[in-house]
Structure formats: structure tokens, C-alpha cells
Amino acid sequence: RKEVEQDPGPFNVPEGATVAFNCTYSNSASQSFFWYRQDCRKEPKLLMSVYSSGNEDGRFTAQLNRASQYISLLIRDSKLSDSATYLCVVKVRYSGGGADGLTFGKGTHLIIQP
Amino acid sequence: NAGVTQTPKFQVLKTGQSMTLQCAQDMNHEYMSWYRQDPGMGLRLIHYSVGAGITDQGEVPNGYNVSRSTTEDFPLRLLSAAPSQTSVYFCASSGGTFRGLRNTEAFFGQGTRLTVV
Image (tube, rainbow over all chains, first blue to last red; front, side, top):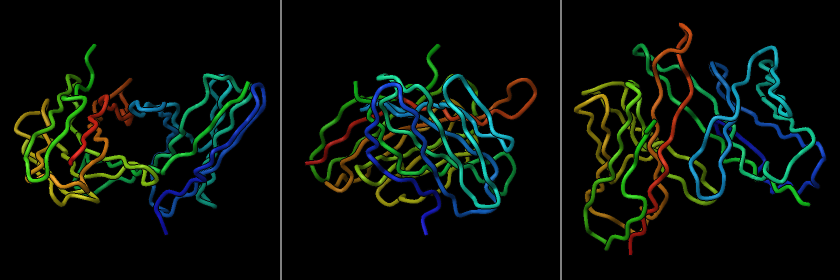
């Protein structure tokens, strides 16, 4: 089983719609969770961290379900500029103090259509 | 505000050639890493470093070497390039603190598109 799994899509969504994607992770010792956004031919950039209580940043809502080991991202009122690949990222703390590693999902490709 | 700087942005190599991809960060981050990204495979960790003088292998280390002589620099060396190493390479760094808490955000360089023919 892969450590972080995502539906690769593509998700084709009309502008203004709400879209949600999930991500599952296999390591129950996972400590931190993130959504990164990657535009075509660009580097990944942090979109938002995911907190246990769920968190919202404008049109974006992220939720974590530790019992079921999945995280979700909800985008409301989608814009053309939201078209990108969304990477689910999980961090497990390695031993040796201060060493953190990121495990990336393969990403979900989102296309917002006018 | 430079962040993570990767060079070169593009490179074409012949099979068997060697080269070094450069990565430098100016944020005093202790953790640096190299990933490769291939279609349908996502980002895969090649090597990482938790501080100057310390490196370790990631998921796909074969054919690559790294060193970390300073906190700022983390070069990736391809010893004898192979077509299977055609990929987009990203360097990333993380570390430090923000408002007294450990900063967990990873910052990426702009990537190097490498083609081996």
C-alpha cells in the first residue's frame, strides 16, 4: 500500500462550483499534514496546513480524520486560477532529533472550466 | 528574498556524462532534500540532509551523490547519466522556527529539467 494515496483525476469542474478531494495515508505515526499546490511546470508551494480540528483559509477548507487516516480539501466558489495539481503531503518525524521528512501523494489534477 | 535557488533550469546530457545540480538556500534551514518528479510517479525523495556534514538516502538514491559541507548548499551529483534519469529535479529546504514553533513548511527551488540522451 502506498504511503499517501490520491485520486489523480483530472477533476473537470465548472467555474463557481464546489469541489472536494480526499487523500489517505498509511502511516499511523504521521504527525503533520499539508496541502501543496503545483502549477504546470512550476515548483510545489504550500497551500495550507491541516489541523486536527479542521481549518479554513478563505475559499479553502481542510479537514483531518485521524481515525480513518484521511485528509480532505474543499474548494468553494472555484476560480479559473484554481486550476492546478494539489499534492497531499504527510510528515513523519524520523528519529535523530530535528529530522523531518515529507511524503508526497502523486497529486490530484484540477481543471476549472469557464 | 532569494529562498531556494536551483541551477541550472534546463540541461541536456549525453549518456555517461556527469554533472552537478546546484541548490542553495539563504533561510538557515537545517533540512534540505532532493526530489525527482516524473509523470504519474509524483515526487520521489532522492537524498536528504538534516544538517551540515550529514546526508542520507531517500527512496531512489541510485546513480546520485550528495554532500552538505555548509548549511546553505546541497549539490546533487549525477555520476554517469542514464536516460532513466531524465526528469524534473526539485531541491527543497525546511527548518527554523516561526513564532516560537518549529516551522514545517518546505520551500522548493524552481526545478531543473534534465534530459539524458
